[in-house]
Image 1 (spheres, one colour):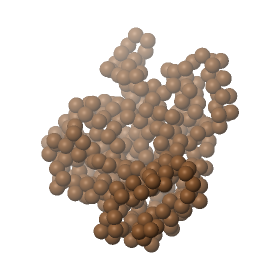
Image 2: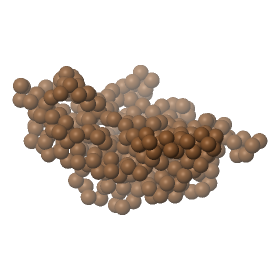
Image 3: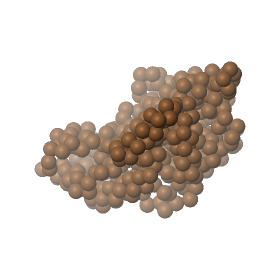
Image 4: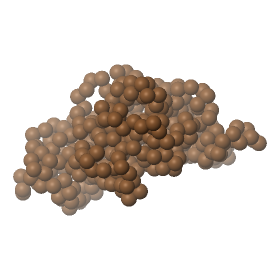
Length: 375
């Protein structure tokens, strides 16, 4: 294998020539932020692409989570997953909300809906679930529980851009969903994100919240923040939207190549992409290592791949519940999260991105196979 560096991901980039054309328009207009032309165009284009009624752009993917809790006036305790990026739980902390962790499903890595009800207390107000790796949560079960107990449902859909379930956008479920447009995502605006809601009143409140709470030039209706996306990233996002379908199609080929190449290697499991009811975006390709069957540990394989300039990622490791700010919570106890701990200690996300050649994917598979054989 060559010395080519292969990272776990690489950003989807628009044509610099096309980007320069839009930059010249921005320079001519001299309108850089505050609901500019490209910002409004991107919001409209994303609503159409994602099949959602209302979408509000943000400057990153964390602020929509924080703003969603404010918009829905969530307090008390929120049931969530320990198997996610830290921003999910941090958004609760920033709102003075206590996270209550529930274990995950071993096959999907999503919050285990069958365990949610037992975690509900008199101070529980919401469920914040994550469509991990872009795999849909058990949305119908979660909706049933939320309805039974009068709980709000917020979905962190950072990984789920364009994902559909039974022909509907996965963003249709829950009271609010949020997206991340970080450079590592299937679709990116360098940094960015969005909040998706279902009615005009909530959309208006969100737009106030992301602009310091201003309703007009002299009226502040809430203690808002500065979460607006600027014109430069909005223009960049418009261009990337034109090529995201092509990027997803290429990711699908990469996933199919991995699945075929790894299917006979004992001790390695990957996600199931065979459910015809799901339109996948192939955001990540995590594998899960059984040390007893594979013959060596996840970390040994992780380090071996790095020796050949293959940089996977142990994503998510460590669990949020094992991090110092949260490990003192009662719900963080290992016995409560046995599946999540096992998954976190066995996962490696293999490289997947637009532009990764199938030849290099096959080389990664060969390295894993050879390492398994002890060569």
